[in-house]
Image (cartoon, rainbow, N blue to C red; front, side, top):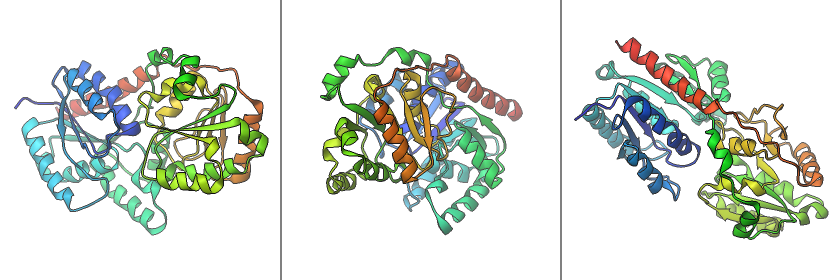
Length: 379
């Protein structure tokens, strides 16, 4: 079996993690050569475009192995450990880079073994798992991460991850920061406005608010729905909230919307491939998350010049000098209502696109610099 210098492992086959991997893996192949990058990925928690994305990676000569993993700790993890050991033995990676919580636990747990002393482990959290916990459960999660952190190098895609390392005094082997970014060529691929209105069956006279995220607890759709229901009638009538995505809370949120009487204000778009192309008709991008890594949907909205209204939760600390960026305290009803009402009353705003032509290149260079440093120390 030929050696694959880089082995990437993740359970998260959807959302921002998958977008990140789709962007960086082709760049790693350019560096290390065709057939030299191995992706070990779970096929259990996927978006509808998963098959096409995997096909694209295979066409770029990325080797792919499907390894079913479950998001939460369970007895099946023992089988996953065994399968990972077999994959490592067969493919002989020099660097194993885990992405998101589950893979980070599995790979760093393996790193404890002297058997893998010649392999370097890298971890990218994409937000830490304990951020979704409270009380004793969060304290336990922090202690567990404190134990795992020294077993790997960390590659962070957001400042918020770095802040948590400092806050909780985790001690990884090293830290490298490479902020999430978009290739500048994306800026020229947005849907024509008239076509977008037609495809989504929208009235161009309405004020369209985009929420582009999965229906999960941390996204706080329920909080937003409550505020929408309290808007003055004149604002409510002209506003439509476009809900892109899917998730386990969808049925519960639909029931809440019916109870609040805001069904006419909501349009459930569902999962849409390359949904960012519809940002051409977005009058306000809204994301009120409790925490994030560094949201690609936010970056897409910024790139197109949409007004943004986001919470001040970790990962949402956007540069407020950027045009049309508005930040409100997390779950503060009065302040959120005031700012949302103000933005709706202001109506459709002129866009100010923000394209950073070097940001994506800098992220790749930062990741490669970490790998090269590791390989140099390996000898």
